[in-house]
Length: 146
Image (cartoon, rainbow, N blue to C red; front, side, top):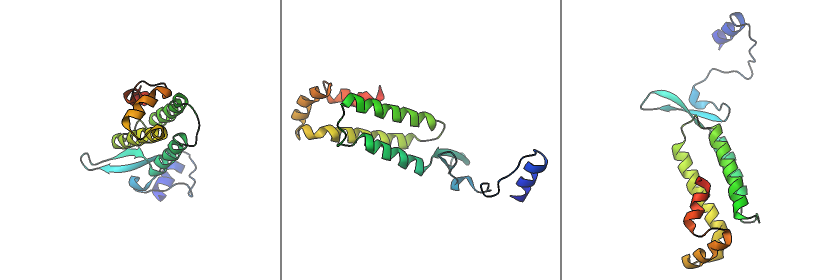
């Protein structure tokens, strides 16, 4: 830390805030919502969304997929799409394929549970899916991906 501070002061003419700066391994740092891990195969550190950022996203998803929120399905899907697209664009430089699959599965489950109270039988769900503005459950699954 001393040598880095000396270089930044003397060569670059920059001030270093010692309380905010640290020299540490990348896997222990949270920087702008990103965490870092060491890839075993390439022996390099790579970025991923930090767990705190993922937890914040899950809280927002929980609010948008709440059963108590009385809004239309199309409005709910629009809000979900805005949140998901914004979050993915923010973290698109990181490695998060597995996380996106898990979140997709979770969101689909939550949306189905919101509308699942219309009937316990599959036949009843297909009949009432017309009330959501959808002809089948397959269209329901395609709303987020489109």
